[in-house]
Length: 188
Length: 188
DNA sequence: TAAATATGTAAGTTACTACTAACATACATA
DNA sequence: TATGTATGTTAGTAGTAACTTACATATTTA
Image 1 (cartoon, chains in turn green, cyan, orange, brown):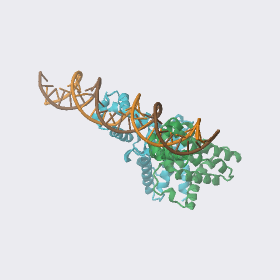
Image 2: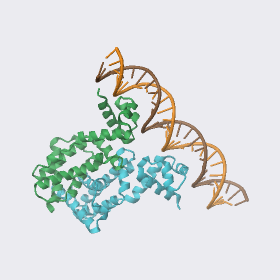
Image 3: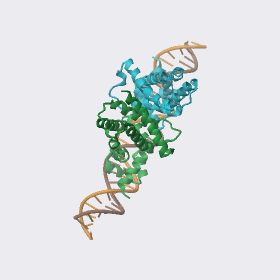
Image 4: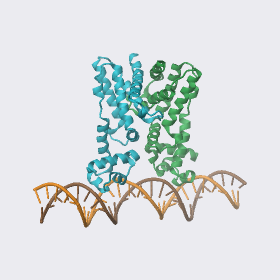
């Protein structure tokens, strides 16, 4: 019965449904809390959302990228990162879509600007991996390539639901994408 | 001084700035037209926007995909399609971002749902191309791959502005992406 | 137990916005 | 010239939403 948790869950639910346009009334209702409580705690609607989203972003999308980057085999590294991030993003598809939508509108501050966060995190991972290998690559290009893969599964219509694939199938899909990225790296 | 054109331009300007949340007042101001004129012509704000956007979408994003698909060499076909669509999308980046944002929110009807439009148009192009070549490929997968490339340039931050590349540089970039896609096709 | 703190209720303020109505004016056409 | 049509101006309606205030009640803490 932690009020804070109630508010967080309510805010996220409302946010997923309507984005930042969700009214404080709706948030209060979802949370089972008085509207004025939200204002006493967070002062403004905007502050409420950014506070909540910042925390959720860390919790749900907390980056394992740097850890994965330690893998020495590049194809394996790419496969792992694709598999890992794709799983997280697709699992939280509705939330991700709202975050993207609001980011595109410029409503979200830097720390919760999802494209920014995704891109820079991937870039760091790539830099880390290839530094280990003493290999020079255009990390911007490959971060973009990876980011594009993730975006495509979240934004483009997907009939053959990623969710419904078995672990094995997902791994193969990730590997396929990894090879595609790798092919351009080896070009250099 | 065509009023219709004024209204279209004003509506698009307002839409780019604020999305469907743009008020009719703002549209009227941008267009240099009385607010009530909008209602007399389009009845509702929603109708105004969908009418305007549908037309703009056709005019600016009119698909050359099928034409390009006739190219017999697959690498060339991919390079051409990537170069062509990337140019159009990046040139209209602000508009595209708003369209994506609204599509993600589910505010736009089918005909102007940009992810849908992009994906299905790419898919058709791929099917057309490979049918000519009597080759069987997973067009869903490759349409997704191409779509991901486009999305990455519109959504992800890009410091080395695509806009500022020369024609030659763009072509090389497109070719690089094309080869990446091709590498997974040849896997089969 | 007493005081401080967190919450709920209810009402209100202010500002915005989609949309309408009434009337006036400009312009083209018959 | 007379009439219809497109537009502008102004005012208004009704609904919504962010945020505030005042007061009552519950819960925690000292």
